[in-house]
Picture 1: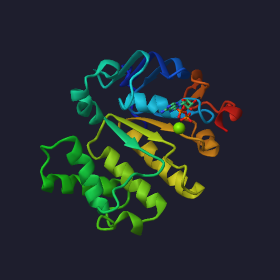
Picture 2: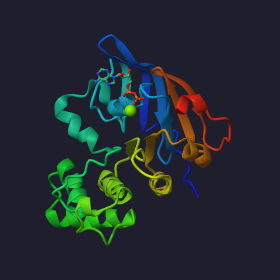
Picture 3: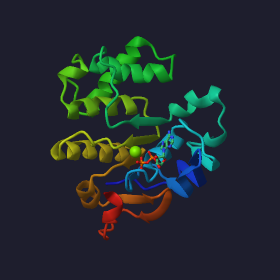
Length: 243
Ligand SMILES: Nc1ncnc2c1ncn2[C@@H]1O[C@H](COP(=O)(O)OP(=O)(O)O)[C@@H](O)[C@H]1O
Ligand SMILES: [Mg+2]
């Protein structure tokens, strides 16, 4: 059973425009994400998906408009408070970005301690193990990234992203390097994480998965949010927009 979606958004973009020099990457985008909701972000290459995710994580700031994340105004956030925002946003990348010299367990524990220095080594290990168990890798904590398959490495990266139980999880083409069966397993995991009450936003080109899961789908074309399809609709996907 899905938990009831809270009315108050956990992430809210209002009139967000972002330019790189003279190039407009996002153009007056409005978007609200809620706890417990899995949303797919689709659109052609260059349509602004990565830019939108980077705004939520305060890697970049909007040229104009507002970005609110878990009650924090990201668009006007001082550099000194960025860490506070990042603790509330887990991030997953296409290429996993694990530290090669650390074990799976250490990678996940590091994700916790880098965000909050008050966490002891012991607590970090315990919580990292819980997170690895939650992604089905409780028995691979001692493995180094190169000893794991791509799908397993992405699971470790997801464990690292959620170990601090952030209210928001963003993922940029998380299955882009994986075969379709493994991609399904990873997307199942995002569904579980949303079911725990997290707002999950996944940028993807995986047409089959997006179509079959029937979750909310937000489509960007040339920086404009052109379609926001609620969950549960079979609807016709904007096929062209996905390619
Ligand atoms: N760091 C950057 N500097 C200049 N232009 C950029 C930069 N990042 C993205 N862009 C441009 O912004 C637009 C949106 O890019 P991006 O957000 O990466 O789209 P997507 O993730 O959908 O492929 C593209 O035209 C891209 O070339
Ligand atoms: Mg991108």
